[in-house]
Image (cartoon, rainbow, N blue to C red; front, side, top):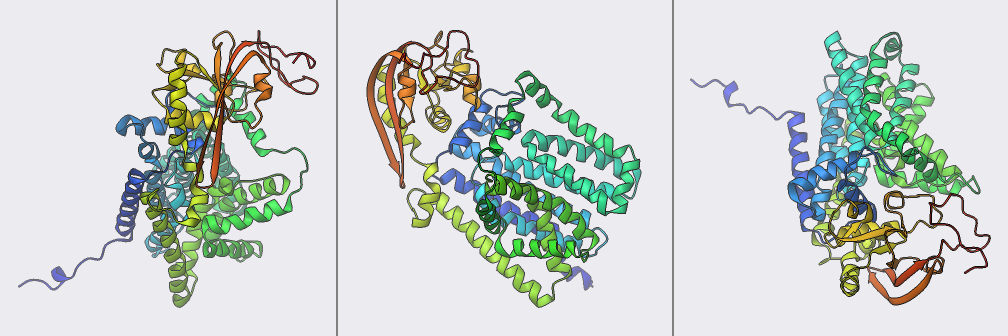
Length: 538
């Protein structure tokens, strides 16, 4: 006789449900990337450039993003979809790491797995994640490392054995170091664990243990090659952080801060962000649970710091994105453990439903672009189009003057055209290493490198005269006045979805020195052979 229990199907575990959902969404996102006609943004193209010459650091960012792109393109080539493919995969892994973080935070709660399912589902469907999964950026590996680090830290605090504790020290240290190699915003995590030790007695016991210094030491060891690179390159990446903050001029912009906070409702979703604010108020009133205290003290520092930055100057919407792995767990925990059943059901539906609708709409737009161009999408996607058309206009110019190197004055233009015309153009530093292609130099107007190309491929008259200037400046006379011979070639315009790009082409020869209007004073010392023209000399 067949047993009754044998005929009862075993329901899938919450983790298996989450894995299935993540796999489906990841597959759809990769398929959309493979089908899309959207081109690489200038920043994405610059990361691709970095991946062509692997190093331990780059001017504006640590090296992990370049290593990831190099790994992906070694498998499937240099097409845009392959350059971007790591993003949906890493976001999927982050959703699974969010599940682990949830289990670590709620390990004493029998509903931990279900909370983890909702946390992972909310994460993988977030509006910002759906958009970010279609691009390649430094935030994507950062978020995975950040989430793994938080999960390892919380597991370390509540470890039930020395073996578990030391294994979490290793995992946490590696995640900390890898996160810093992705983006220095990983340092916010150290603020978070310091605050956690301030509010949690169990966490404070690590101050009397070797485990905390060993964890931080492992992270520092992983980061050390990049620190050495910075030391050898005048701390270029570290200096760029100060430049990016833009703490000059009038240092009080309250409207900018309000705009940044408003943008967070779109990044995290209106309902989750409202719940985050509400629970932050509960923390201030001393009404937050132990789990909520941990999640809030690691989530709020990035938001607080970047909001203060916005008050002083400016802030991009994604600069506080590290707040949201922990905030996602906070929201899921509240929905499952504190909300009434009816309120929880409605909140989940009103969160996941609109989020998935937005995410799937983005997939459809990306997959069908440019065949289908919804009016509201064209403005936001204009920066991801038009470069191939511009390259088609510039190729005849390149063929007309095949022996002339190219010089460019705009980082985004240079990055996008180096990628779009790969095989035809090559950054000058790589050309000097024997890589085939027309060398492309960067015009450094003040002799102070302000981006990767000015650092590695700055115009050098010893190697690049005569030269063909492809200028994105509306008025390139400060460049043309630096040469005795100037021949205009043409002006090339491309308008795509309301955005017009203009490249002005000149033939230049007999460099005389940098011309600058006004006093002729520049903040940095020019290299040998690249002095300044006298103010009245040109």
